[in-house]
Length: 242
Image (cartoon, rainbow, N blue to C red):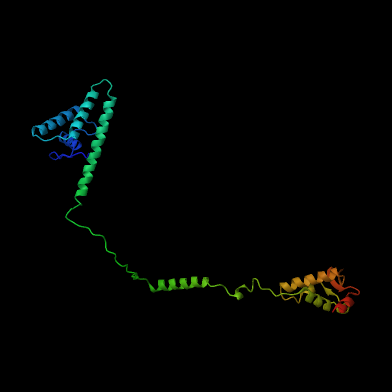
């Protein structure tokens, strides 16, 4: 069953009355003198009863609580009384803060006003910022540069990296044998003079190795230089093959 709440004068409940008595008598809320507070509280309850006002049960329960705390303080060891007094002080401090916040909120609330939901307004997407011409030109060039970066590079861009002229070893063998035909001797270094690129240099070197392996040419030492000569019969075998 829901408890009926009574408003007695300006007090909303027992905590409100206790807080009024503490402020009226200038008592320390952090160290409440229970005897003085109980005397003032019971006096006020008596006044309400003399005026034929119905005293709510919560006011009487608070009176019993104060009597219990005072009785416990009369004992030699009243640690329990101190604990109950600190608990009451904490409730009063919390209630005091709630009253201050409620007073601030009440100043901003009016039951005579009506707040409707905000209307859905179409967003204005017009760009209204202003920029210097140089800034716009720089932004345009940067955007164009990023666009070009996404375009795949042309085949010519890789020509110096992956494209190489293919030179066969067989063609260089023919070239070497022509230089050594009819018993001519050629310095080893001079065999690479007509090489146009690295591919041709490598192919010429492999051709010389292949001819030496097939005993068609030989390298001799003359005056500290390597001389390349055709072996006996090597020319005939080469002529027969060609």
